[in-house]
Image (cartoon, rainbow, N blue to C red; front, side, top):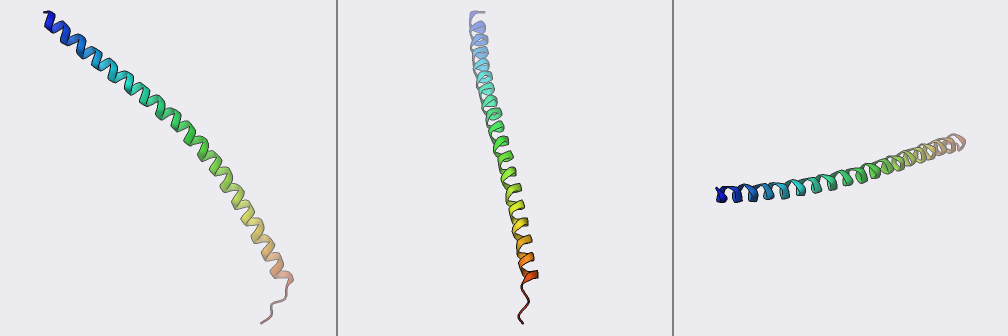
Length: 72
């Protein structure tokens, strides 16, 4: 009876320790997920800015091409 109780207690401690490790890992994943989400949002802002700058540059180039006569 005592041996069975010791085994049960040892197994319970092992499972409790594994559960705490799993919770710690999950918390780390959630934390990293938030960081990654913030970085993705910042990247999207940068992409939008680059696309706008590219569109403006293309517009300027088209305007210059229209003003300068074609020398062929």
